[in-house]
Image (cartoon, rainbow, N blue to C red):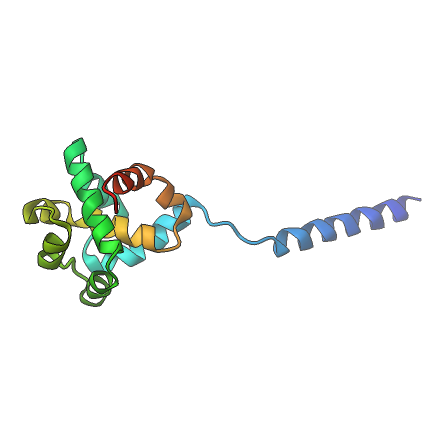
Length: 140
């Protein structure tokens, strides 16, 4: 009787392990941050540097949202950024009509937001919901 119970318990454990292994792995925020850092490194900043360059004022946040929307809306600008590993400031200024100085000051934030929203970063993108609202209000 005990051997039968032990066998049943073993098969339940095995079944639980098989189910756990077969579940798709959901990435944690920490893993997304590590992946984002690999993406940001060629641009010269890390995820943890973004706090310094994030816009604080509403007007600045709206301008950054407009710049990100212009970047995401232009495959040419995104390709240029990815190939050169630099923000195409002059072209982005012309395309978005956001002042060059503002784009340069918030360069890391604009690059990071564009890469996160364009990539597969569901957790980190969730933190950009305010930016998405601003982008929608820009009509972009």
